[in-house]
Picture 1: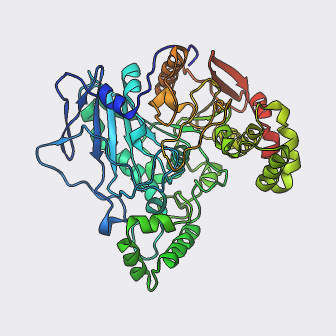
Picture 2: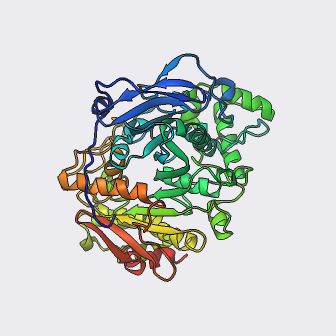
Picture 3: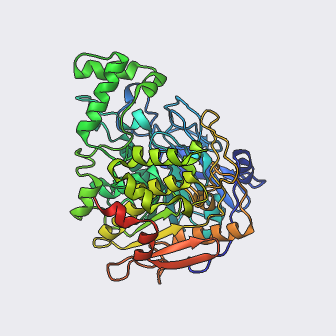
Amino acid sequence: MRRLRGLVVTLALVALSLARSGAATPPEVITADGAIRGVAGWATQSFLGIPFAAPPVGALRWMPPAPVTPWPGVRDATRLAQPCATEGFGDGPRTTNEDCLYLNVDRPASAAPGDRLPVMVFIHGGGNFSGSTTIYDGVRMAEVTHAIVVMPAYRLGVFGSLALRGAGGGGGTFILQDNLAALRWVQRNIAAFGGNPDDVTVSGQSSGGTDVCTLLAAPSAAGLFRQAIVQSGLCGGGTAFESGSLAQAQADTAALAATVGCTGTDAIVAACLRAKPAGTVLDAWKGRSGTAYGTTLLPLSFADAVARGRIVHVPVLIGFTRDEWWSFEHGLYPLSAAGLQQQFADTFHERAAAVAAAYPVAAYPHREYALGAAVGDNLIVCPSLRLAGALASVVPVSVYEFADRTAPPFKSRNPANAQPRPPGYDGGAGHTAELQYLYAYQSAEGPLDAAQRRLGDAMIAGWVAFGRVTPAPWPAYTAADPVVERIGADGASFVPVRTAGAEHHCALWDAR
């Protein structure tokens, strides 16, 4: 990351299919469940829609991921699987599909069994209630770094978070269980693709980053990965995208059951809910979307696990974007001066005056950005810096800030959610802004220009090098020298945490 260079391309879904296709002989790999045939690209090969668990439908709804039934012959792995059931948001429209536990693998075209290439597993974001693997790819990362890239799906919202009483299955933990199942699939199968099961990095963005934090706190995740990357994760900030207690998950489940008319014993309620159409429970769910702690799989909340040092001991890269919440607030446009003060009051209550003083309108090109800066610093940036300080006493930690304000802005893929962006609104280096540079994120305008493509290649190389390369390309974040690597349009620079914290007003947010 110290020198930023290279090339990355972003692709729409049709272009992605073209990039993943070519004239070469379709590649085949023999997995533990059977042979698969993928797609040959120009310099990479892709295997799409590979099942890592049985379809969680019917009696398997709200049950642990079950083993895949082996198949005879050669299974087609040339098409993306349908997204998991979701109420829909910016990354795509609503869907009620529950047969969704599939993953995609991108690898260099020259990869072969025995190569022991590094493995990158990416967990997508979307609040744990939306999102999909279909809007990302690891083609460029595989090409530039000679790594194997794996992107698993996982159950979302009500299907990942419900906690039935007395029905077995580890209720409230299906998001975690699915991610664990995908990582175990990697351990069993990645060598056949040319990957090294002993050199796996798990990364995630937004709620995917939160899920990486959950994995770090899950005792059974030990040994499944060697490095972890948390991108704009909400870990310990108390949001609805994080883990809540099992009691809370069970209360949310009881509220759902009452709403859809499922009453009686625990067994009757479970059977009734499993018989409901996916759309019915999807619409009725008002609970948290996350993994419940106080369970066998997740005994402690993430914050408690960190405080007690009871986490998976691997190097952790923690990052955030400079303008995390800017783009989320343009829907308030045009916001008057009085309207901004009301937003501060509604959002920050007794702290509103202090927040308004710390984020004066004159410091931002739009009033909405002042609000977005405050929310993003409170939810993501300052908690990320606090997390880095806490983790640094337990495991090796590095910290970055993505600060390229020329990044293409977010663009909703969901017609029901799309809002025209007001003139002059670019979103800055907002939430998700780094994803197009790394994983060809399709919920962003594009394409990247030449300078951004060079930056993207440098980031890709840095992500894959983290925890692997000596000397380390990322500066260590330590108590003696807490430094943040700032990744901007002109390259990388190193900023003391006191400077970064002051820029994001962390003294205000850390005072609880």
